[in-house]
Amino acid sequence: MSKKTVTITNNWTGKQVDLPLVEGSQGPYGIDVRPLYSELGLLAYDPGFFSTASCSSQITYIDGEEGVLQYRGYPVEQLAEQSNFLETAYLLMYGELPTLTQLSAFRTQICHHTMINESLKNFFHGFHYDAHPMAVMVGVVGSLSAFYHDSLDIRDPEHREVSAHRMIAKMPTIAAASYKHTIGEPFVYPRNDLDYCGNFLNMMFSTPCEPYPMDPLKEKALNLLFILHMDHEQNASSATVRLAGSSQANPFACIAAGIASLWGPAHGGANEAVLEMLEQIGTPERVPEFIRRAKDKEDPFRLMGFGHRVYKNYDPRARLIRKTCHEVLAQVAPDAYNPIFELALKLEELARSDDYFIERNLYPNVDFYSGIIYRALGIPNNMFTVMFAIARTVGWVSHWMEMMGDPGQRIGRPRQVYTGATERVYCPIERR
Ligand code: CMC
Image (cartoon, rainbow, N blue to C red; front, side, top):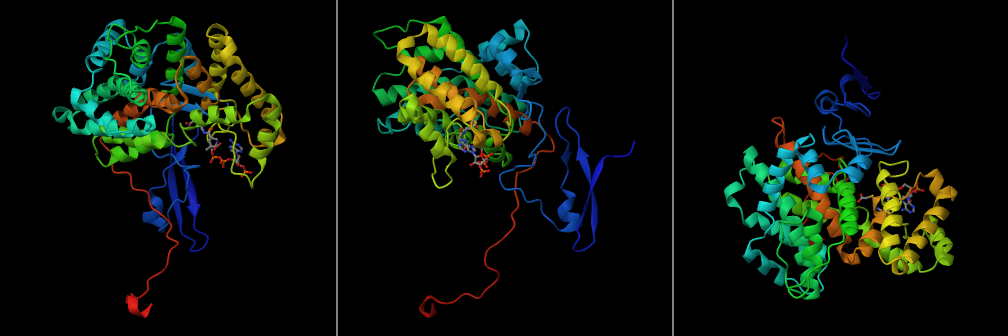
């Protein structure tokens, strides 16, 4: 069978090159453009990566047209409703669902690393009490690079694995400590007798004088949110982790880079911005005014939690989170939270019946409804993106391990089309 290729002709010079197609297991083919430069002296130009596959990966599959999201082939809806955090984390990291024995060993490994070094606590005290928790996360997670010298040989698969376990284990401890710092309460040590999500809630809300009354519904809701946020193929933060890691930087620094990228309002920071937007809108009567503003190109306002680079259909995560909002809010203080949920539903209804949003395929994304559940769990707005970071750490370490385990791995080094000044002669300052 002949090899599948695409022929590119440079109409200017008449030169041609046959570029091989790269076939995946599902989804579009890629074109291997690497010979473009050597054969034609041309570069592929795609700022924003609209049509560029930066790597091949076996972890997550998205079909944006159909609204499909799969982790290692399993639909995310099945995992969110039937699996739990550590089982899905194992699946993402190792490629298969674990047996009981494998899951138990994995849980033991993660529990072994949940504490943070006592001296790491001093880092938190260097931050002002009103520091944004994401700023604290970037700093403290990056500072983990200064510990664990025993396992920083990134060429050693066992070192890579223990670093990945450490990050999954310590992220909730660091996140809860960044919250406790802002409210002036003592840090709560992790409890390994609790599940991953229960342990996080306990570290957030218990104090030395009051235990946290564990609510299975809240634990279940958090489990679902964390699974839905765990991975999303080559999003900005995962691509950042890969690019940082491609230079063989240590893994804690790479994850800190991922957290920094996630923080932006076009990415994970949108969940915090959605709640701010809903609070600003205030009442259902004001929704049309904000829809008008979102459509006005002169106005920088956008509907936060709407639109996605890949989904041109309903984001399957948003659908499930919306359904969970109904369940959680019905049972957890409905009077306090229903008005904001109703406002969000109204906003979705009006936006989805408006030609601007229909023509551009703008649907609610994962960030639109997630904050409403977080708030019902007692999580403050400025911790929403931190919640995203805890879950996405699993995706980040899975991508990092996949990349570092590839014997053909090379430094990521994008090129550019230069549009600056051409060569000119230096002019001494007194003659300028
Ligand atoms: N409100 C109003 N108009 C929008 C919105 C929005 N939320 N999103 C996109 N558009 C318009 C945009 O103005 C453009 O219109 P036109 O073709 O007339 O110029 C068109 O839709 C295409 O938008 P784009 O900005 O070129 O699309 P993109 O793929 O570069 O950006 C996005 C994707 C998610 C950054 C963008 O939709 C957005 O800013 N959404 C709001 C922020 C948000 O919710 N981010 C979370 C993303 S999902 C979770 C995650 O990644 O963490």
